[in-house]
Image (cartoon, rainbow, N blue to C red):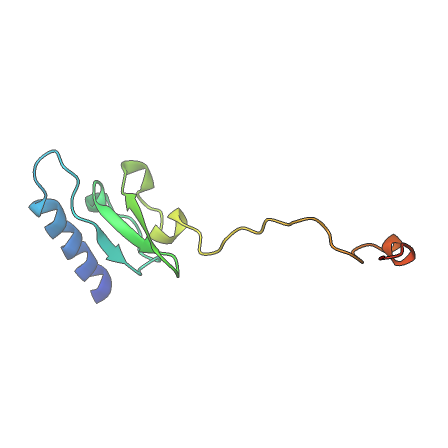
Length: 97
């Protein structure tokens, strides 16, 4: 396992150990979107960077084997507005004013 991922796992373990009983551990921020979720990460709070902000997620058992990057998209989905003037062929014959 690469050094970055080992360091991140160490930080997650430390945050879980320092958390009081029956409380969520401290948030651990990361840019490692290509990190696979392992069983020892379950119950941790992770902030995954999407290119603009850190999105907070609590790791659950169903997420094991998935990548951290799968949890949040990196782009804003396109919402198309109304068509503008000249958007169709027939609008060439309609006077604009």
